[in-house]
Amino acid sequence: MMSSFARTDTSLLGRWWWTVDRWTLLSVIALMGFGAVLMLAASPAAAERIGLKSFQLASRQIVLLPFAAAVLIAMSLATPRWIRRVACVGLVCSIGLLVLTLLAGPEIKGATRWISLGGLSIQPSEFVKPCFAVAAAWLLSLKEEETGVPGAKIAVALWVVVASLLLLQPDLGQAVLLTAVWGTQVFLAGLPLAWIAVLAVVGASGLVAAYAALPHVSARVDSFFDPAAGDRYQISRSIEAFMNGGLFGRGPGEGTVKAQLPDAHSDFIFAVAGEEMGLIACLLILGLFAFIVLRGFARLLQENSLFVLLAASGLLVQFGLQAFINMASTLHLMPTKGMTLPFLSYGGSSLMALALGMGMLLALTRRRVGGEAAL
Image 1 (cartoon, helix red, strand yellow):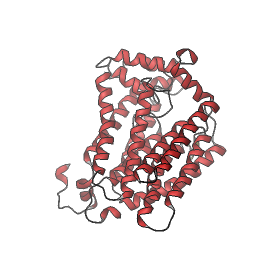
Image 2 (cartoon, helix red, strand yellow):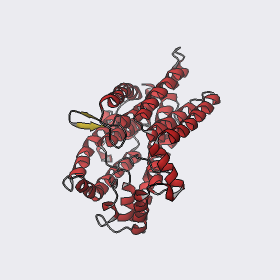
Image 3 (cartoon, rainbow, N blue to C red):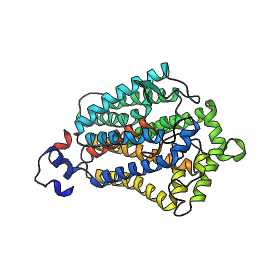
Image 4 (cartoon, helix red, strand yellow):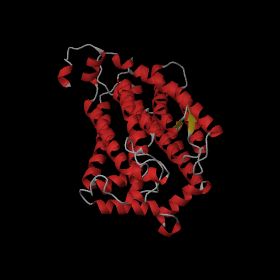
């Protein structure tokens, strides 16, 4: 493909090919490939448990992969200005859907996080995350432009609104992830350390309040610290899967623990990778996540635009932290949290939102000349 575009090619695709981070793009596509293989291995048992055909869940996920790839490429072609516009429009729509979800969404396992639109089940919180990261970055970067717009104050209000809506679902994990992204951006924007201190106090207070007010949160925390305090069925099966897999795994489709793990195709898909592909493959998956995050930050070292720096950093923190939370909870390094493993876990909303976010990242980290970065 490299020979398809000469360096003198000034077409849209030609300029894109020579300016986009091809290694990050390749790594994201590799994760999508791993996701397709793991979905074929992990989802049949889950599908049969809920009365579906063996490969019905896998088919739903895999059929979305070309659309996710299209979103990824389309967003990576955009300029920072268009990324900002898409994020702002997407954030407004996502907040509206969050409110609609609370009012009309079905309650599933004690939470109201999904809404049905046109026959499709959508989880608006997944789309809030990348759009919030970019919109907040724009607001925080307004201080450089001296427009007189109180961008920082608006960003604070925006964080309060979105975090509150997530907590009302309730979805503590997504609220914590969103707060971590916002806190990183506030720090990088050079705002007073007092803001960071206030954010830390609010965050710690929120976690304590969640432990006291949300039974499922307290149960997971208690179970993590005291094996006799709660149900550890899924985490025990997860650890068993890693032990069964060894270095090289049992082979695709040969795992047995997935038949006993209710969330093997979603929250615990990393355990399926451990049993069927082994430690080596798990380290490769971990390496892909680490490579994307570290390479993204490396490309930002020479970035002069505060907006690009804040937006891309927010997207990288969201992506890396979400992967870390999923893998750490699967390995019992932290209390379990229902959060997808990017591009590997089952979930159409998660897949499309991650493609949107990584497409935005690829667009923001493209090499530009002159004043193109400000477009």
